[in-house]
Image 1: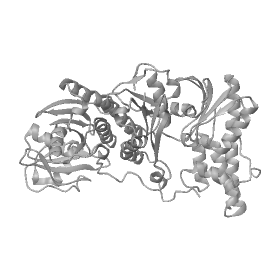
Image 2: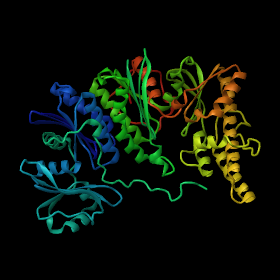
Image 3: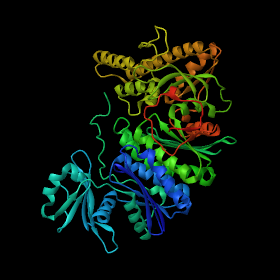
Image 4: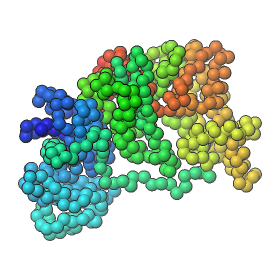
Length: 231
Length: 348
């Protein structure tokens, strides 16, 4: 299986190529530099492997939540790259990918992932390791005030992501005894998008490229004026 | 080279296919007016969200309609600015990545260059050099066009763009968004003799525009009529619309007459959304005829934002060898004077 993965929703811009069970990664923390970097990363990965886009099976992308613009860049790149090569896309949750990284790097089997969503809210999701070594969602993703997030059940949860950096005290109070530790600096990586994307592809979760849609979680983004006319 | 053009700078998703031999093959525009109407103006985040949903399906529909396989695409052009940054980035990301995946060149296009070259899409196109009046919701500019990428700004708006003045005055008149075309329709019923609006900055030399005063003048006129009539009648509203439109049209005509004289140019090109205005076209054509100047404008659907003008400008630049790198940053503010004739690999 050959999966190309792209992730631009958080401060790190990254791309990964999964090929023959091995993952090659390009990863750089450069806020606002994603558009300069991401295609170059994809290009290098394929050149190194000596393959072209049509040789791939699918393009996986971090579908959010995260920066609205960043999520759209990932979706747009996935759409263009996949359509040009006649490939399907596999949307992967950025929160799940963060949890997957926490497992990969910290051995965490239960992860409470939180990204800072500004406006005194966090993007929130809880993930638990399944039998295949993949992080699976235990309750639906949400955007909520840190003291209103749905806490996971049981103990031994690792708090991960920028939400813990900004709202650590409130989240810790909310989770109380569930929590075993916190790693607030962990960022999302395309390596985990590739791994989860490959699983999604195997489970038949690939979509035609035009259906590569962002998941924002926050959908109330504009207020309607009480009076439109100036009469 | 068969060029795919993608335009997503504001609230319209536009795509088109242009080819040197066959000209414009096909184009599609998806307008987001319905999305923004209830907010009384463009909401940038909603515009971006719509673009990322619509761009690729529209490209697929375009290819299907033109009976073109994606493998036949020889190059991709996308609007990189100026415009709403989030909206621009959608078209840039999709367009640049598609070109990369197809293994074909890409080129980043200046939105206003697309507009000012749009009359070249028509039969019997004007030859260089010409003076262009770019009038839209975001711009009121007079530009001397010596050739592709050779632009000299002759005059600009000091405040509101012409289209912006139309939209704001329409709002004062209680017209639904987007008000410009609605105002023009209302003006049809208006009496041109009842009110007289000023012709801003025509009493002094120069090619600058200022339209924000007209909106204030409309407000004051409305207040005066309200004091007189109590409730403002439909006829009064139409009369104000007519007087406003007349003032904008005459101001633009006066400045264009000056501009073609100053540039010693025999051709004038109108472009941008406001150039679809019928009275402006008629008045300008008549005034220019008297000066011995030929006036060209794009068909109405290419006055507003569209993919055809981007495919066309992109084809011109790709044909001349211009290539954009793999980075696809957007430039929300991008002065037209920074444009250059086609070169090698651009920074954008």
